[in-house]
Length: 276
Image (tube, rainbow, N blue to C red; front, top):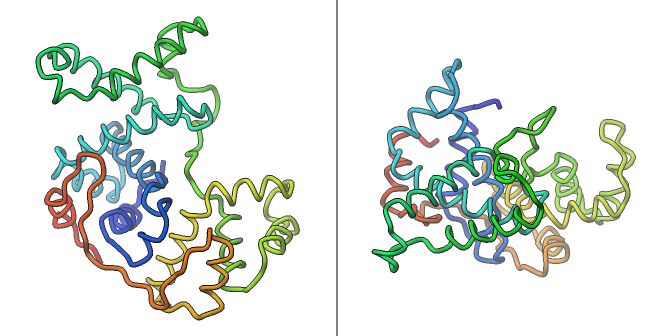
């Protein structure tokens, strides 16, 4: 995994900064692609021998606020394990599974479920019970049941990552005033990418279109293109569930929270690095 400080800062900006389009659709707020990449980054810098300056700088920003990131990682692990149960393609990492098990063991050993039922995280217990039932039904041993064995060959791809061809399609559909059909045709005629069926492109656009749009709007803002003309807003309205985009894009500081990560703690995170 390649770790770049600039990308880490970009991820922080896109998760701790607010904007004037996030409230237009739930998927802008609930998409997990950024959080998957952030947790993978944290797991990597805390579990491997680091060689590059960027890797060490990212690790330092994490270590300065380890309590915050511990809560963040626990929240993410719960979400990713639960998504995996609902859709086997959304495979959690071995670090997700390990942390989930540690949360369960901690709750049992401390007898939180018995002595402090109102403070206990019952989601952990419910998910663990469901996992055990699934695995008993399948007759799987524990090591395979909990996914601690890495798959043979290449590591699993990030299921939330937006493919490059979807990013290009978004540019075609918004900036180049092309229909989704034409954007798909462009990709099928692109010699640099594998040719897929039309249904495949439609499926992947449906899956990734909100993250891809969010990235596109952020990129425009960073490049200084902060306005959307009437035609661009109409194209977004047509292809993204009828949302009405503002004429001017705005990004501003507003520390929201994710899982158990509170606003004050996010301020501490951002204060620990120089966000440009």
